[in-house]
Each structure stands twice: as C-alpha cells, then as structure tokens.
Length: 82
Image 1 (cartoon, rainbow, N blue to C red):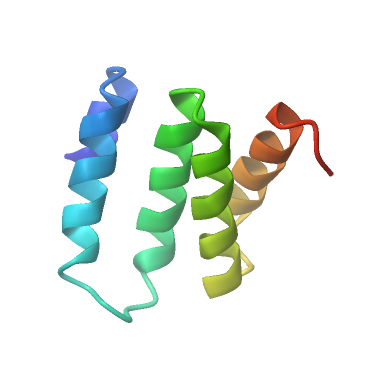
Image 2: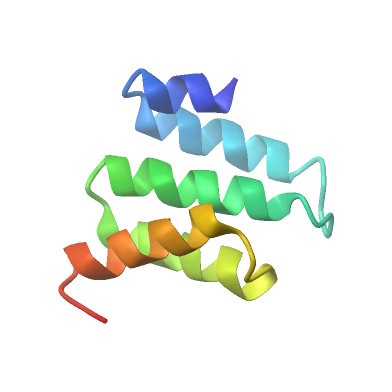
C-alpha cells in the first residue's frame, strides 16, 4: 500500500506506488487522492518544489479537498511563498 510506505518513511517508494496506481485510473475523479498523496510524500522528504507541483496539480483537478489545500499551504510555506 502506498500510504504505508509514506508512513514508514519510504517516500520514494510511496511516490512510485502512487504513480503506478495513477496508471490504472486515467481521467478518474479519484486521481486527486494520488496527486495529493504524491505531494505529501515529496513534502515529507523535504522536496518542496515537487510537493508544490503535485499539490497544484491536485488543486487544479479538484479544488475541494482540504488535504490538498493543507499540503499546498505547507509547500508554499516551506518555500517562503504565499
């Protein structure tokens, strides 16, 4: 499970797993969960630019997920942006 990789600090493996899952659901509305999870994995690994890219992608796909907004705010804050 991709989430368990992230929870155990295996951030790169979490990204790989979520990318694999994305391949099974192109265009599905649920992709926002993978986009945001990828952003969180990058954020957790202190890859703030990559986290921002994926959080923005999630927000642009569907703006209503609070987890996405929180991740986006954290990435902007770590990068010193608003």
